[in-house]
Image 1 (cartoon, rainbow, N blue to C red):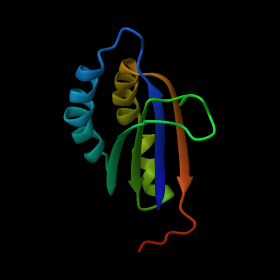
Image 2 (image 1 turned 60 degrees about the vertical axis):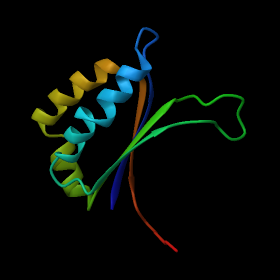
Image 3 (image 1 turned 45 degrees about the horizontal axis):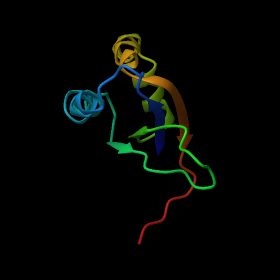
Image 4 (image 1 turned 30 degrees about the horizontal axis):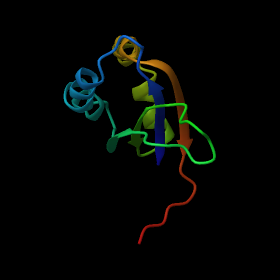
Length: 106
């Protein structure tokens, strides 16, 4: 499984409540419509361990079954155009692409 983790903040002039409404409705639907997506999660970061402050306030995680499916969907020019519009609503993003090596649940 491949996971895209995006950690980010909002620009100073952004409205938190307006952003949350957009992120948990319209944008979440868009994420789930990306080809091959298995799951999409959204988080508000509450605190950081071993730091006095958390460097990011929000986090999104999106899962694909494999790297090929992820790359075809994520790097598609049409998707990148949509993503560039969404990026105008946030600041300081970091995109982490990880491939699962081990998973265990209880």
